[in-house]
Length: 460
Image (cartoon, rainbow, N blue to C red; front, side, top):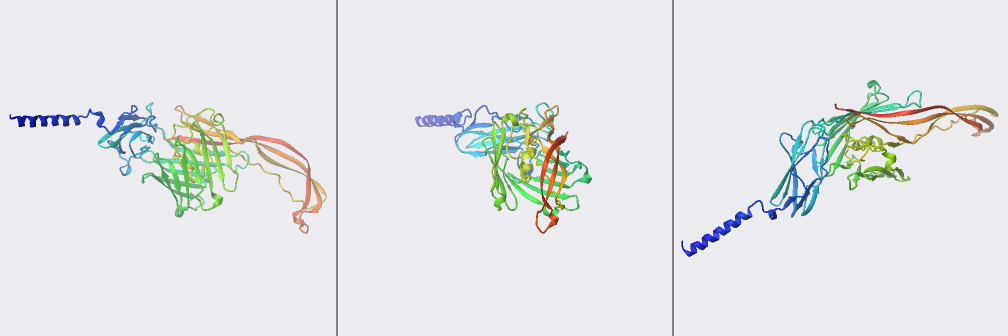
């Protein structure tokens, strides 16, 4: 071999060795993205778990994107993964923690999703498996029906008795697809006032389309007047706006993804405009402020110990029972119940603030002057405005009932009426004569209570 050929051979050999070294996968310095904080590439959660505490932590040296696809036999509608979402799907260089939000697995079968994060020439694949059972090996319960019953013991004719039922139906991913509400004085189908069907369509990403149809049992219906609305969702799957044909209502969240404001100032009528803020203490709802144009603010505020003496954790049900207790407009109350308003209060509310008005003194007409008449009437005096909410649970910690009482007293008032000789309206004797009252005395004749109860029924 000549000297020139030897030199050329050594040069080629050196280049080959260098190229082999550059392609070696053990060279950590060539990675553009790297998992940190102990994040594993395979993660498993149970059917009732909706988030991973530590999320997905990584460091990227340049721009990155993330996608989610189904694994194995499971398949989402329209090719999308609807049961797991990330807090972000792209970003630049830096350190990141992606939060995963999962829907409870109500299918009874395990399901998997593959998260691919691409940064430059490097791809990280993380497989998430959500079991079909809870940690104790049981299937995740889901609400089948909620029944509301109001027993009116104030009125001997029970004219204010009320019965409502909420029946929930689900799609293949465990999301609420339909809620059928029935309303009447009791559970009898024959006495129902109306049946209302609310349908939820999740076909379009980051949207929920709602159709509401009510049929009255007097023969009329709203078939030709189906109410439609659209709910816009953020990356965490929480409602940011509900749009109606003529206006919309906006929703805002705090750093903990808890509902912090309801904004209804986008309506055309100034008298209908309002906003409400919600405040929390350590993740527990403790304050609301309701502001309406031309009215003073209504403030509802209590301490944690007043509202949550037992600290019942609000983390088992696929719906949020607090949605039945809070004073939220019917147009979007169901969104709160469906947990589309963020993380919600960490515990079940154990107080409800509700003030009832008693009757005033009746107005009599006396058409005969200069006489004394003995009269009496009975009125109801509600003795409390804040009512303790009592919960009952099954052996697995699922709520079975939520109830409270409205205590009241029946008071009989006796008094004498002294009728004068001056007409209330001169020239119109049919309006009677002016009078004064005296010798008024009150006697308690009855102590009782109205009873309010929600009962929760599950799919098994």
